[in-house]
Each structure stands twice: as C-alpha cells, then as structure tokens.
Image (cartoon, rainbow, N blue to C red; front, top):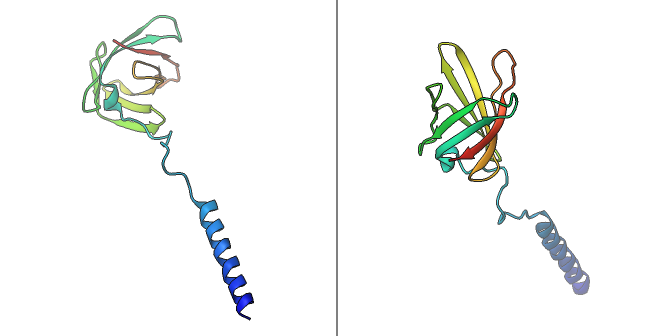
Length: 129
C-alpha cells in the first residue's frame, strides 16, 4: 500500500512539474511589436516622394513626439503608435484631414505613406538629416 501511494505521489508530482514547465512562456526576450515611441526619432527628417518621383519635404519630430510638416506649416500631436515602429499622424486644417503613416526601419531611415482624401497615393522614403 505504501509503495503504491508513494508511486502515485511521484507520478502526480512529475506530471505537475512537466505541466508547469511546458506551459511557461519565455518572458525574458523583447517583444518585437513594442515600439520605441515617436519621440525616439526626434529631429529633422527629409521626405522624398517615390510615387511620382518628385515632391517631398521636411518633417520635424519634436522631443515630445509632436510633428511639424515645414513646407505645409502643419503641426500635429494626434499620433497613434501602431506597433513595430509604425506611427499614424493625423493633420487637420481648413482643407480637411490628412493621415501620414511613418514606418521606421532604423534610427535614421524609414518610409511613409500619405494618401490624399481622394485616394491619390503618396509614398516615399524618410532620411534623418
């Protein structure tokens, strides 16, 4: 009887140890979907449009994460972090609303998409000045 009880306890202990070790998640690695925050990219950026081959401009990202499009004199603090170093910035003026989507591939480069309200696509590259 004691031998069966000891054997049963040993089996239950082994099952519980295996269940815990098989279900534990590795929480020591970094989460690739977590972004650094737009303020990490503070500075002056050159936008070069690749859709039409011409156009672009200068964008300034402030330390507080706000964004200024110099040539259009547009400012925005309406920034959404989409994860994976992708950010959506909404600019509003009397002509309407434009959304600029930034995707950073490094601390000094990236790409952007800025479709017009009528659907005309605008996209290009970002280079930190």
